Image 1 (cartoon, rainbow, N blue to C red):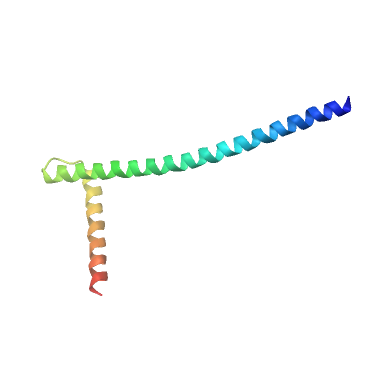
Image 2: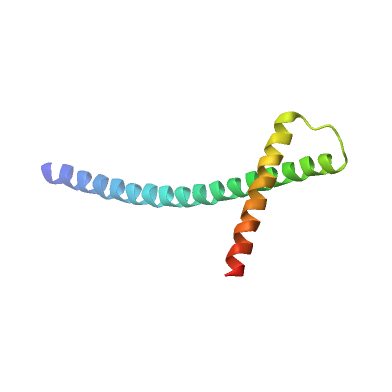
Amino acid sequence: MIHEELQKLEKLAVQVSKKIEWVTAENEQLKARLAILELELEQKEQEIDHFKNKIKISNIVDNRPVNPEDATEMSDLINNYIQEIDHLITYLSE
């Protein structure tokens, strides 16, 4: 009787161990997939921001009215680009 119960418990322990291994493997796969999806999301968000900047620039070029927040943001962005270009010119001049 005790021997049979021990065998049942051992069988259950083996099943639980296999289930834990399976769940652990699935968890690792899901973590990897999540990391990939987070990178893809970040890339898509950057593409959207880039596209928004293109639209703002297009509006400025076409002399369309741009709301002040966008104009300020674009001005800051252009100033940052100019500073980066200045740094690159200085670096290349050395």
